[in-house]
Length: 408
Image (cartoon, rainbow, N blue to C red):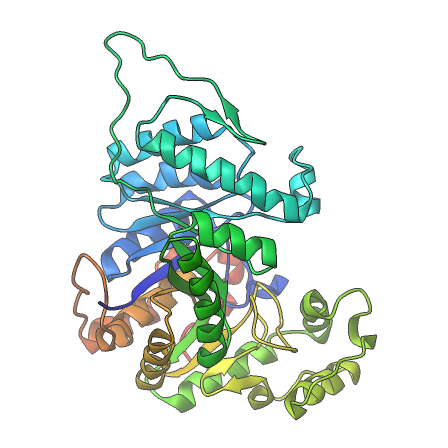
């Protein structure tokens, strides 16, 4: 048994997509290039997150362009009925070799209320359990109805000569997360793959063991994965030089805004208690109007909390965390995560296409992959040509000046 390596499919893209000068929004040609890239390079699949594009529609659009990759499609439960979702999932799977997966996202109060979903945070996990329980039964062909506190479905009559679409996989493996007490209980009862934002390997392992024990108490067994950004290069020096370049491209205003996701309403005025001197140095730098030192953002060997599209994790590893280093050291760190229970890694590097090519070339061959197909072998000359000549449609013309950021 090895690791599953997934990439990321996203509309927002760029060398530093959290900054206006280093970002763009992908069009259909660029989405097509992203998934063809992932499909051909040896990745298990990719996460299609919830952004400006509707994720199920995007999956149905892109899946026919590929042959192998899995589409881990993020979805907020309750925005459509579980009956309709099961019908959509069965349809997509029927015509795409059963390659659809769902990442169950419980969302936040503000975002969901704009869709008409007003169930409070903790209660939403009880709702989500019933929703996904009903979905799984429907996907597997059980149309006898469902009676719950939140989900009530009448039996679905079958029309003569129109039998249900058979499931492409049984059971349907559900991915998702939940860190709060209600979230852990929900996860232990309904998920098959439990995901968490990154941490150091030992702390992430501790979390997975706690959640795994809860699942065992509920008579179930979970598998575990994490989400990371990545900078991998031929040498350690090259990788950290690119991390420094990313830091240099980030304005202090953006850094403070991204850090605010962890600091809360008091922002940089928040009183932070920590025994880690690096945490205080990071805070002092931002308060003084400057960025922290690149190595003050390293919280564990090769684990870096520099700025990313998902935050600036100055207090502790979270949504914006990176793994940075030479191919050998990054592979060693992934093996350490795996030894602590992490079997799936959803990673991204920016821009998405050339960094996926780099990862496939120099990192994937060093890993024991639990994938259904072999990693293509790239010679060094092909790799260099791919990075130095990025197809024109990947780079909007007004951002040509950013091409130097791809290869440091």
